[in-house]
Amino acid sequence: MVMAQEWQQQRVEASSNPDVWIEKTSELIEQYDNQRQFEELAMAYALQAEAYRYSGKESEAQRAIQEGLRFAELAESKIAKTLLKMNQTWYFLQRGKLRQANTSIVYAIEYAKASGNKDLQIEAEILHAQVMQNTGDIARALQILEQLNRSAYTARPRLQMEFHALIGSIYMDVGANDIALAHIQDALDISREHLGEWDVSVLEYNLARAYQAAGNDNQAEQHFKAALEISEAINDDLGVAYALFQMASIDIADKDYQQALTRLNEALPQFKSAAAHPMEAQSRLSMVSVYLGTDKLDNALSQLEAATSIINTLTNDELHQTLHEHWSDYYQRIGNYEAALKHYKMSVNFMQKVQQQTRDKQVQEIMVRLEIKEQETTNELLKKENELQQLELQEQQTSYYLLIWIIISGFLVVIIVSAFLYQQWKARKNFAELALKDDLTNAPNRRAIVRICKKGLEQAQEQQRQLALAVVDFDYFKTINDQFGHDVGDNVLKRFAAVAKQSLRNHDSFGRLGGEEWLMVFFDASKEDAKNIFERITEELNKSPIDGLPNDYRVTFSMGFTNAHPDDSFDSLYKRADKVLFEAKDKGRERLIITD
Image (cartoon, rainbow, N blue to C red; front, side):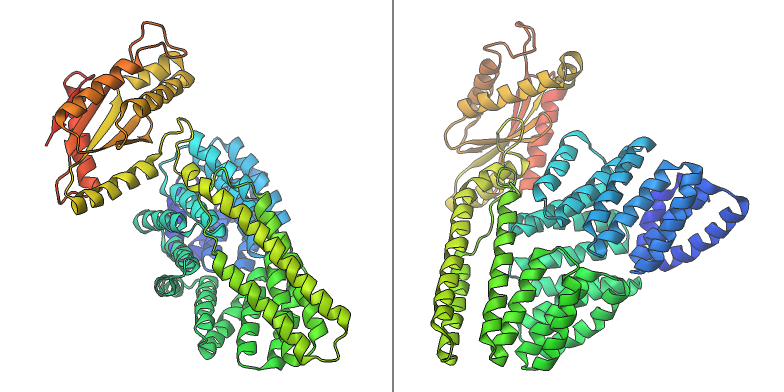
């Protein structure tokens, strides 16, 4: 009954049964209010606010937040304050109030630190990164997540899910859709196993968006439908609206305008009711696309005017760009080419701002390759140029200076976008390598070496070659960290990476699996080859002193080596090598054990 003891599990339960928990917390609020138990009362309001958010009732959630903060202040409950401020941050993000969201999450972080609850601190920091992503500061969002990845581990599924989900969302923002899909799928798997239905619906929705961004509309629609079914089952009206909106975007791409309009008309009232201004604006712009596609220009004008009044209150440059593109299209349809050109020019200006923001994000050194579709972009520019040339032919009375302006405008667009694409093309060559490197040792990281092994298994089967895998683990590495410090432990890892790079054969690979554990992948390696490599690395590792260790200190490691079978997957191969590694540990360490 005392929520301070059980609030984490109760949040999971509220995710699957928000209506039940709204009713249950109402009863608890009445009980705690009568007994003047302010801390329990604040916690009850915090859980109620979250349950309201899960059911899409944003206004009710805000009222619960305000009441909860009042009692949290009276009780000086740092945990309740943190939960309430995090819910308030989500409330502001939903409405596009980014400045207020940033202020709210800063308070949440302060309260979380004061509470001494490590998991709560991590959750607040992840939400801080989410706010940074929404404001367009992806570099800052990544810095927050990288710092958490290095210094703050948690086994709590909710935080692991939120971490992977946000990383996936950031990669999707910059077009690295393959890696985005992997992270969001990881988050969805965690949610299905450990969390509630609302969390699963959000991840189904995010995975669908990633597939949609990757151009796989069939997969996207399946996951949007899954998100829709869950949202309907838990009475999450806002979740239903999000899913319907995205499914409508697929309908528009397929020119199924009637189906799209039906879904948008169902989603729009929910966005309005929740005051989700960015989504209301996007819904209206999608309706403009429908009406322009069906030549219903009066309806298109009405939605354009409504969307303009909303977007003018927001600071989202991408929304402004889309708005002016639609205005330009509308004016072309009615023959007002001067107004069409004016809005097209404004659209280009906002496009330049979006591109400048992309350059200013400074994500090249920490992000993977951007999926830039140069040819599609070039075709779109040529299409715009052709449209502008047609304006001149259709409007004979247009003056000479207008024609000159059209040519200059188109020329500038080509130069600006081409320069941007060229910059991205140069940077893209380095992105994949940077994203697959271990930050400490510059060796391939877990994702890279696992990928190399999986591809090696395929190649070995196709070419009838022999592949082998070795798992390496240092002996008494914890003793080094405890006795000499983690910096010295890092020096040992760096030395090992340098020695392994020199000692392996040209066609062998290695990478850091995590902590002090490493993987090595060999093609056509005999048992004698494995023994020679083990001895060579051991000798080179101790040939000269390692910074921070005594000159006579000997660093050793154990190694399990196994050849792949024709039917092996990476998991089965790794488990076999890992098993013999532990056998080496059990038999005294500093040894290599080989198994077939």
